[in-house]
Amino acid sequence: DHAALAAATRPRRAGPRRGRRPRTVRAAFRSVFPAADLTDDATFSGLGGDSLSYVRMTVGLQAALGYLPAGWDRTPLGELERLPRRRAWWTGAETGVLLRAVAIVLVVGSHAELFDVKGGAHLLLGLTGWAFARFVLGGDGEPSRAVLRALVRVAVPTMLWISWRAHREDDVDLVNALLLNQYLDPEAWGYWYVETLVQILLVLALLLAVPAVRRLERAHPFAFACGVLGLGLAGRLFPEPGNPFSDRLMSAHLVLWLFALGWMAARASGPGARLATAGLVLLLVPGFFESALRGGVVMAGLLLLVLVPRLPVPRWAVRPAGALAGASLAIYLTHYAVLPGLLPLVPTSVAVLACLAVGVLAQAVLSAAAAGVAELRVRRPGAPAAVVTRP
Image (cartoon, rainbow, N blue to C red; front, side, top):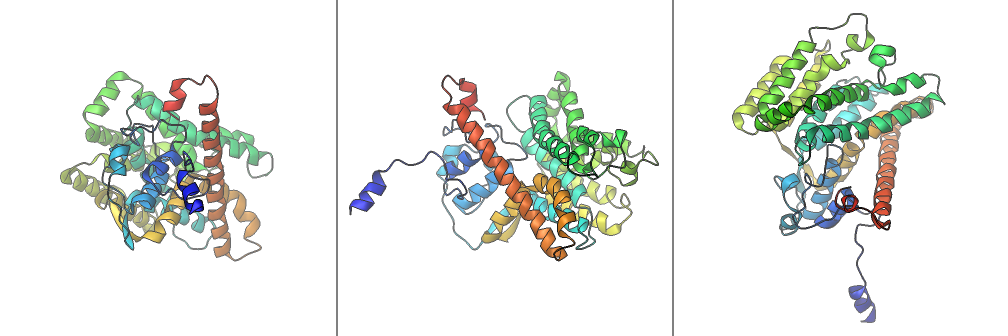
């Protein structure tokens, strides 16, 4: 069988083909870290995995193994490759991934008035706090630099996108790209989630740049998160009447506590800490929002995040949920440009689906471009070793 012999001896590609789902653990790692030196002792956290890439990694691992191993983010690649494969109709997906997908659908659907269920963006803020603590602070490098990298990955695409829209649309100004609308132009609150997140990350980067603060966070991670929550609760005492950001509960100092609750959920390692965090969710969320439904969405999502690490879902649902979760930032940014043109032409449900599809496609293009740039840097003659070992 000459065809079979030729196929068996043909050199294998180093990474997965574009657009193909990773079928091995190593291919899943390569799809997230295209320029990394994937030794057997490499881990997701050690390679610099963050709150934006963890979704793609969870989907890739579940495609390769059929399930998501406990502690996968700190398990060496070699150990993950030796784990047995499972093929079942149902699998356990990380609650944070599923909630992120649900939250962005709520954001787009409520903005399109397909339904009147708000709270998705505030839930996203809590989920971002959870991912921040687990992946940005959980890495092996210096925390302040990791926070700055996360900030750049959020702020730069947002600023470029808003700048481009400012040249084409009348409802966006170039000054909005500075992400300081809370102070410069409070009426422009459309991108409030990203603006607030960037401001929070900037403050945390400055705070963690202090060596004593870094040592304190390393030594007492849960207590430190509680301290951030206390700081956020103090911010709720200054509502700034007349400022649309504050009136709509979007100012950074008013919603920092939601970010901190997600942070606490990631740091709650024991039953007592998890129950304490859940109790704080039940105590603090009700009454903050004027709408009981909005508060209920945020409270239910945070309780699931704290108490239920994984949720059972059909295997076929993991990939689409992961695509939505991984593209949540791109969907959030692009749906404002897609909705106005589609709503007069097609049913609202179709417009919402189109917004989700455009965001997923935009994220896929950005990921492919980033992977291509990383590969070019590795292949460049004389490239420093640091470029090869860390993307």
